[in-house]
Each structure stands twice: as C-alpha cells, then as structure tokens.
Image 1: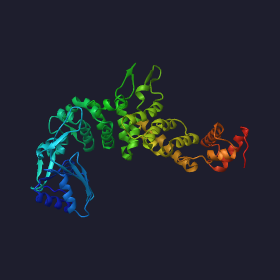
Image 2 (image 1 turned 30 degrees about the horizontal axis):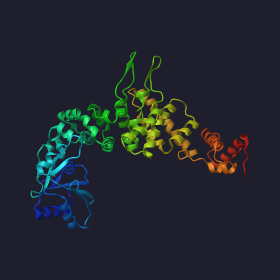
Image 3 (image 1 turned 180 degrees about the horizontal axis):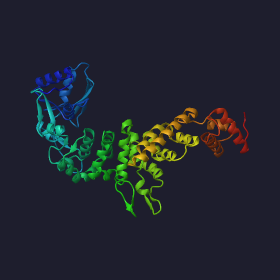
Image 4 (image 1 turned 45 degrees about the horizontal axis):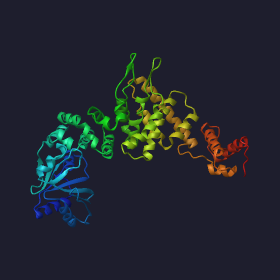
Length: 469
C-alpha cells in the first residue's frame, strides 16, 4: 500500500463516501507525480468514476466546517478548499479535438480512457482510494520515467501536441522545473507540431513562459524553445538574438546565450519575475542596432534606448500586464549600461546622484542586473569589473546616505514655486524646477529646503522674477 499523505480526516471521508456510493475513486495527476518526487503539494486532483460534481457536494457535507463547493458544469468539475488544500473533483472522461481549437469535446469514460488522454506519462498516474486503497495504476510507465527523469507522452507525440498544442510548452516547463530530459520522440513531436502553437492564446502562452522564467533552469527552457522552433513563433525578438556574424575575422558574442547567462547569474539573488524579464530584454534591441565598423568592429549603439521602447510592444503582444512592473523592466533596460560606464571612469558624486535619481527605488535591482551582465570568459577582465563595481556600490551607499536621493522629491514643489514667484503654470516654472534639480544633482547645493529656496531666489532674479515672501 502506497502512502497517500492526505490529512487523515479528508482521506477517511473520501474512502467512506466512495464505498457507500460504490464509485471508484482515485488520486490522479500532478498530486501523485509530486508524491513520488517528494515535492510539496497543495493541489489535489480526485477522479471519480461516474462523475465528480455530486460526489464533491456530498463530501463537503461530511467535512468539518462544510467547505464551500464551486461547480464548473461546462468542464464537469468541482472544487473546494479544505485542510489547507485546493481539492478538485472530476469524472473519468475521454476527449476528442477539432483542428482549430485546443478545447476538447468531452464524454464520460473509464479510468483507462482518462489516463490515456493525459499529457505526459508522469502525469498519467492514479492512486486508488476505493475500492483497493493505496493501489497504484500506471498504464504508461510513468514511475519508470519519474525514476529516469524523462518526459514522454503516453500516446503518439504528434497527436498529443496537435490535439492540445499548449502541451508543448508544458513539456518544456516540466523539463525546467523538474530537471528532466524530454524523450527524443517527444522532442521530435514538438518540432514537427510547433506551428500548432499559433492557435493558443497569448495569455496561455505567457502563463507557461512565466513559469519557465521562474524555474530553476530557465536557460534550459529557452534553449528548448529555440531548438524546437516554438520561440520564433511567439517571441521572435528573443530568437533573433541567436547567432554570431563574422566580418573581416571579427565576430560579436552570441547574444542569445549571453542573455541566458545573465539571467542565470542573477538567480542566486532570487529575483522577482519582473527583474528576470529585465535580464531577458536588456539586449533585445541588439539585432536591429548591430553595425560593423572596420576600425572598431561590431557596435550596438543605442540598443538600450531602442530596447526600452520595445518593452511595451513585447508585453502588449504577449498580453503581459502593462503595469508598474513593466515600467520597471523598461527603466532597467534603458539604464543597464550606465553603471558599467561609471566603472570605467573615476566616479563623481554628481554622476552617482544622477544614477540614483534616474533608477529610484530600482537602483539595487539595476546593480544586480549589471553585475549579472558581466559574462566575459577573461577572468582578469571580470575581476577588474567586479572590483570597480564594489567601489561604485560603496559610492552609491555613501551618496544616498548623505543626499537621500533614492526617493527624491524636490525640496520645493512646483506649486510652491508658482506661489512664491506669482507664476501661472507654464515654461518659467519648468525652467526653475529643472535648474533646481540640476543644481542638486551636480552638488552645487544641498538637498534641503533652505538651500533650494536661496538658489531659486537667485535664479528667479536672473529671469526678472521677484519672490513674494
């Protein structure tokens, strides 16, 4: 008998209800997979032969607290939250598909039908609750594949992926999350079916893509996406980074693999999703800005500015949120060369103030990205950069401590300027605000109200204005 690891009151209620109703009942899918992999689980899938909706309702009546049951009649499923877990109930079913949709035509089926329709053998496992409690049903070698670390479809890969093309992305996502290899026939099936991803909505694609980016090995995921031909179909800008062009014996780095290395370099910091996107997009405009100069070699002038302009376009097409996180990505793409440029020269306080002012709350994230961007194989060069970064980071700390620039707000507001000099909103107010900001950033005055007002009075006088105090 295989341990189920469900809370005992829940398992006992499941067993007794199934026995009373004479309905075979199984734990299935990801729960069983993760049980064998000893991964933490919080979602439970229960398959009830003969239908799961009424079964779920009767079960809720028996459980302490009477958890609320949510019904999804169009899918034939029900869900409840109990004992700290989300528990979903579904009847055994078989499916058929139309060529233009991943939404299946569903009809009642047997346990065997249900397991045969699943995406991968490692998800086609069932652990019996009743009648044979603890008995494992494994029709397709899922346990062997779990032990071997292999992702494989239970049926013909081309049919599996043609029926539901999102499964191609799921295969790659599982490879990243679990550290598994995709079996060769399954990988070939993804390559030959890659065009089918076009019928999947951008939202569903982005959901899987974000899971790949969050995984322990996103580099493996993107290499598989590129190798199978999927990446160019929904993220062509990323695919375009691949390759090295050589002219007069001079080549540039392969920016696809450089980008993946940058992303991997920052993972020890456990970065949020938006910062991982900043790593992916920091050099996204290098292909359209690539030029060859016979004297200096390859250049990518302005790729940071063009890249920042491309960020909203990419997010919009992938149906990613156009929110503050997107603007953070855009900011870091635009600024990612600035700290590296500062390390090449003696760092002035005014340059540091400008960096803190422009980066704002994201200055620490910017430094994480820039450190990760050092991917040279020249150890001496890397050491020099890192030593210079340490000097810059100390300078950032000192300037921020003394000047409080990270969340900088002008010590005198635009409204105060208008009141003090009897001005209506217009270009004169803008000139005074800009002059004040520049004076503070250049270190001409302290970031205090008294020094700001004294500076503004002098500047206003030079413009023919008088303070009304």
